[in-house]
Image: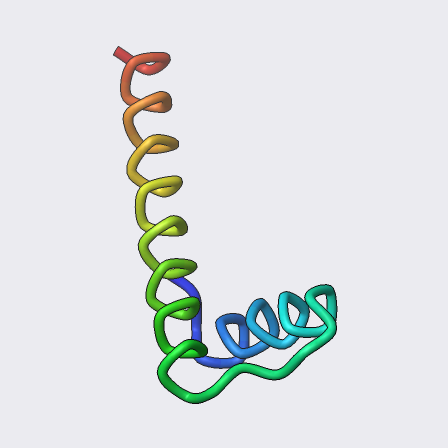
Length: 54
């Protein structure tokens, strides 16, 4: 899972690319989505490893 700094960095980079700052509610939604994406990726990698090992 992403730690707080990694989530902050992802959001800051997204804001810079978008050329604007987000309000706290928008920022939290992006952080939550990034965390969920990261969890899904980890689950997928575990499944792939299990299939390759099994």
